[in-house]
Image (tube, rainbow, N blue to C red):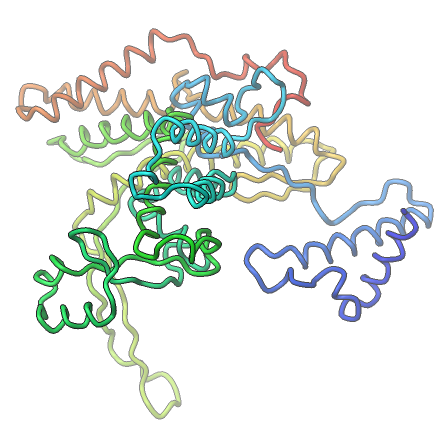
Length: 463
């Protein structure tokens, strides 16, 4: 078997184009293709084998081993909110089985249990074999991955349903439309739709009698059931699936909702401040200051024609300038992912600094939440990534970054408490006070000490 493998890989390396059916067939010109990765590892394997056969018993390889974090944004949320159960679900802490947790499968299983109690599709008149087919498709682990990942990074749940209906599983993908009556949800014929366009040329009037709903593209997630599900119900089915997954995420990964709510209350308190600056900011362990400011953008504006060419016609560029006006909505929706990403970036810097100081480890490959190096250094890499993950969350004052941010926002608001008269702001102050009391009274659960006695092979922070 090994001899056959070597012969095949040698043939690939010596004549990649002539043997592309081995490494590239159907796996190059598509999303997340791995054909060229297969070619690269084939070349590295043969190069190492050649060196070994020449007498070098410890040859180097140019292909790193890469360990990827498990649901990275939720891992940070678990330690920021000290949610022990969530920490186990995303492998920050080991679970009772000493096996890696699969958060996507956990969320899908939670949806299944919800549907056993109350199924949203039966209310649409969907029953029997079609109901089973929809549930079987929707409860697949791969379906759970999209909402779990994107909601963590700030995607609007109201728009996620389109990812189940488009050809590329993105919100901007291709799909069809069907005319539907908003009164009873029935499908309208093209003739009926055209007649309504003629009778009601104004959209606001026409919307009372005609709406258009998305229809699944044949290559979409729901495309397998495109002809089985009535076209006028495609959008409703997709929305019901996403709605259930959003609810399940709150159950399985509750710490993320706590983090979002806490950051939003903190942001609103700072925004209400009568002192400058009235934007949310925080300081990372290396002294980096992060300011959560988003400005609105003006409409595209053309610049003066550019005459510095020999072209027959001058070129005019359009530019999009930012105004001085801030965008509170985008500051709010962007705060949770910005906050977590900044800490995540601090973790990567801490890891690189400590790992590069090791005499035996001089090769680093890194991107976002993935860490790679030469195979000989992976055990060391794993240990340093885990240690620096926890230390990154410990500020110089001994509290978490979230507690520090909340404390600063609360301190700012309490100085002006006598000037605050609206009920919402008072509610945010009360919520932040409760949050601080919980921080101070609760013994830390998601800490490095919780895994110090655990075998390294049972720690799956990255894998």
